[in-house]
Image (cartoon, rainbow, N blue to C red; front, side, top):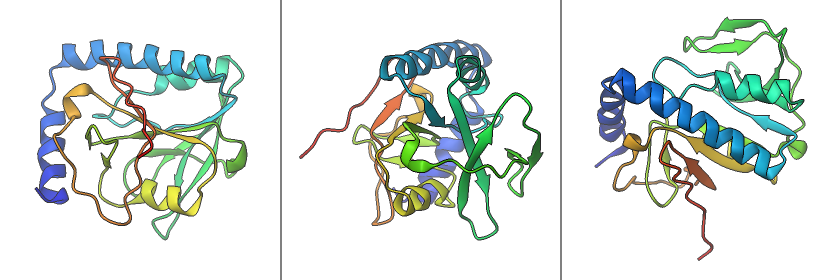
Length: 189
């Protein structure tokens, strides 16, 4: 199935998740992500500010800030690129052109010091392929900024699909964390 049709189906499916499933899953995912951060002793992370249908990241972000872990979030540039900019307790945010909150701050991450980048997903498969919203922001960001950070997708287990057709621009993830503790580790071929 082509990506745009699959994306449309997965987005529709995600919109119809039961509220109890969302709340329970968000709590489990939050705990698993925090454990992952603690276990790996991350000092600096990049993570998205979640929107209505994405896995909620607020508690993860707050925990990181409370535990002196630097948090950077995406800020969209005019040319469909993005930077990762500092978020802290006093960060003011605005809605960008995609109706996603982002900091007013322009303090950019030193990407060589980032331990992990957590990405939102519309869908994923067992081979660590991801499908996003379709603009290619994360794929472009990863290809232009290939440092030694982990690329980790956060999503609901129900977003898993059998197979995602990939093209040359698609970048695989290193891990995917869902509520069922599915952490898929990339294996070398």
